[in-house]
Length: 261
Image (cartoon, rainbow, N blue to C red; front, side, top):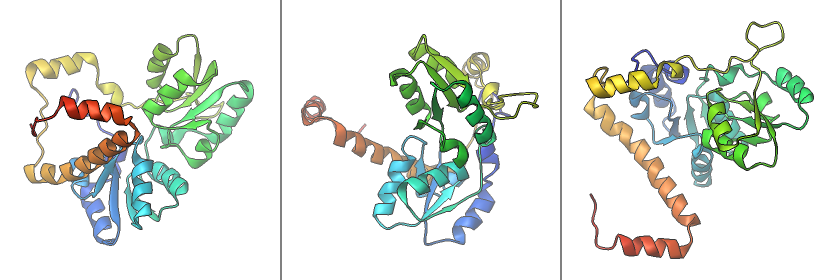
């Protein structure tokens, strides 16, 4: 890792031993965890999801009659539960950035910018999500900023995304969603201190020196791969369904006779 102190509030809020006990107490549930978790937590999971595919996977499991044990982000879990109607038991974790967005302040900001469209990450509180024009993952929010017919956007996620949005949509204006009131020292503190620890310089340093190597217990790693591979296989299947058959035929022709690597 570029910086060994760079962690995540979702990971810190979901210790592996406590999570294992939670799973043991609900053995009838399919365990679905978010990507922002440790390898040990993933080793207890049936599925891993990202914010861009979580809704599809839970909807798929719900259609099969599965009851879900979800971790760690309660806001993302609540959003997916409402969208799918799935029976979900939620671990009570949250992202320190998204948890701070304030609906009251966002409403006031919207009044000042009535033409602005609101882009919200689903790790945000439900009251903030309710004010959104688009709810989506990082990549989905960037695509919305590029493709929507609007010149101004209020963005509720880590402010690091604004640079990418400005690159893909030059000429449009992006405003950070508020995390505090008028009396606060920081009107919008949408900034993850741990993500900011990783930069180009220390990334180059670890690549050149080999320092800060992370060692995962092989058995934990083997178990953690199961839920990740399951998600990747599901994503590949979903992508295949939306591709034109002619494209699939071309790919099959291209790779004909090539076995597994």
